Image (spheres, protein in one colour):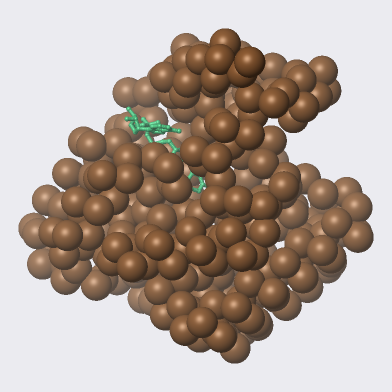
Length: 306
Ligand code: FDA
C-alpha cells in the first residue's frame, strides 16, 4: 500500500520544503489545481460549465493557526462568489470550504462565524456551500458546524467519509429531506480504531452508505472516481426511480475528465471539484497518495525537469 507511507512522509517539514520548492512541482500541480487566483478559477470553472458540468470551487488551505490567513481565505471566497454572481455562473457553481482553513482550530466561534460569512455570501449570490470533511479528530466539530450552519442556510452540504466506521450511522442521521450529503471514501491516514483499512472494507462501507443515501429523501452527492461505485449509483437510481436531478456525481479536477463528460452527456448531473490558490501542498499529497500512477507521473516530471 502506497497511501499510508506517502501521507506519513507528507507530514515531514523536510519533504514539504522539497516538494514546495522543486521546479517540477508546478507541472504536477497544474494537473490537479486550476491556478493561483480567482481569475484562474473562474476561467477553469467556465470551461467545465461550457461542457455541461457543474463546479464546486475550493480555495486551497487547511489547518490554519493564523487569524490573518483565515481572514484572507474568507475574503478569497467572498471575491469568488461575487465574480460567480457577476458572471452569471452561480447557478452551476458552488464552493467547498474546510473549517480549519477559516479558523476552526483558532476557536469554534471564529471558524464557524467565518464559514457563516461565506454561506451568507453564497446565498446572496444564489448558490450554496459544502463543508469539506477533514481528519477524524475534526469529524464531530465539522458535523456540529454543518448542523449550526443549516439553521440559517439549510442547503449547506455535509461530507461523510466511507472509510470511517461511524459513517453508516452518520448517513442514516443525515439522510433527511433536502439534506445535501457528499459521500467520499476519505483521503486522510486514519487509525484502525476509527477507520476501515483495506480497500475491500472501504468499498463495502461505501456501498452500504450509498444504499442509505440513495434510498433516503435527501440529495446524495456521490463523490468517487471508482467505476464500480459509479455504475452502482446508476443502478440504485434506476431501481429507486430517482430522477437525474435528485442526486449528482462529483469528481476531482484533472481526474477522469473523459468520465466526467461521459456521465454528463448521458444526462447525469456531474460536479467537478475545482481547487485553486497557492496552498496546494496538502491537497497534492493526498492526490499522489491515492494512486501509485500519480507518483510515477511526479517522478517522471522530476527526471525531466532539466
Ligand atoms: P479510489 O481511490 O479507489 O479510485 C478509484 C479509481 O479512480 C482509481 O483506480 C483511478 O482510476 C481513479 N482515481 C482515483 N483517485 C485518483 C487520483 N488522485 N488521480 C488519478 N486517478 C484517480 N476526501 C475527504 O477526506 N474529505 C473531503 O471533503 C473530500 N471531498 C471530495 C470531493 C470530491 C468531489 C471527490 C471526488 C473526492 C473528495 N475526497 C474527499 C477524496 C476522496 O475521499 C478520495 O480520497 C478520492 O476521491 C479517491 O477515492 P475514489 O472514490 O475516487 O476511489
